[in-house]
Length: 327
Length: 129
Image (cartoon, rainbow over all chains, first blue to last red):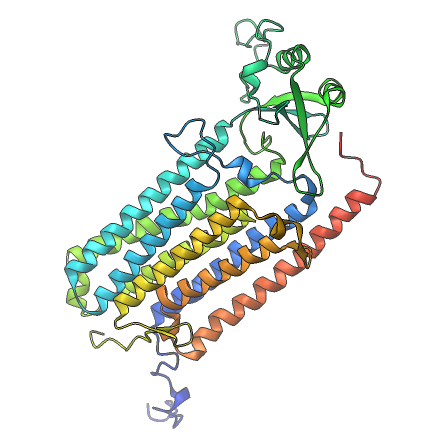
């Protein structure tokens, strides 16, 4: 065997192996490089969001007017408070996570258990908040008309306050019969997208109510949506109007450009998926801490690694918060 | 691992020193909370001066948001993820790589998006109907 094993003469030297020039364990370093690649994925999404936004920069929805709800406060205009709350939840769960890592360094098992528990609770609160945010966004608010060109037209009264479709639509006229298999075309189903009022009803109600104006997707130089006068409004609704949009989905979005909803669902959804997996991994590590795995192993490095992931999720949210809600 | 490599406890280039790692964590939390509160307040008020003035095709307000976000990202990475305590090599491998690639991609895509906006605006495509 002596003949086949070549000694390089570099054992113990820098390139001889067996040392750690970056002074980090294999697992921790790989977590860092995974985070780099994941950060590139997220920045790809956010950059394409920026691309689409720049492409339609004068017709993009204003986030302050989209996310105005707070749970249990109906009809109160509360722009951004709820996302700010979600941001605090996530930052705070980051704090408890890093406290758990710190306690792990000091081999304080009970403190690690407490802080990891708080972190997991924070994760669940965030996920619940996001579900609520999605539900509110999907359900919609005032409703709008989509034109043949795919533009969104929203209704206002003379004071400039938004008016909901259900408040002025002429319910008596043009009742829309729901298609069923018994009385309709047997191989066709009712389309899944079924707003509560029909376009005809909205049009009738709008024409009957002189107090109503519309505003279009395009914005003036101050960044406000352009409000048409009564004659232009009527022309817009009668000539261009096509369908009623309530809430947001991947094709239609009552708040403005459909791409806004698409990116919102995709990016916050992908982030929410990260939070969900983060909670899952946190739970696994949490139970390992409880049964004393790391106490026996002699170190709590696993807590540190899952901590890195959890902080990364927080980091991504900081950017999502800025680019979706603030900018 | 119980020996615990020493944490660097000073932030703001040494102007703010903490006594222990735990107090540093709480200190950073307070700083992040203040920054977030400022962001939300600015987002709700939207001061006219910051909205109406532009720098490099972006509103001043948006520049402030982006800078504050990078500020927050720095402290999350440096103190919560302990980047401050890692070796220079690991730090640069992670930070320089991502910073270069992300800014490259963002700059290219935003310029391209702005170009397409101009094409739509001055070109023959009519989509405002």
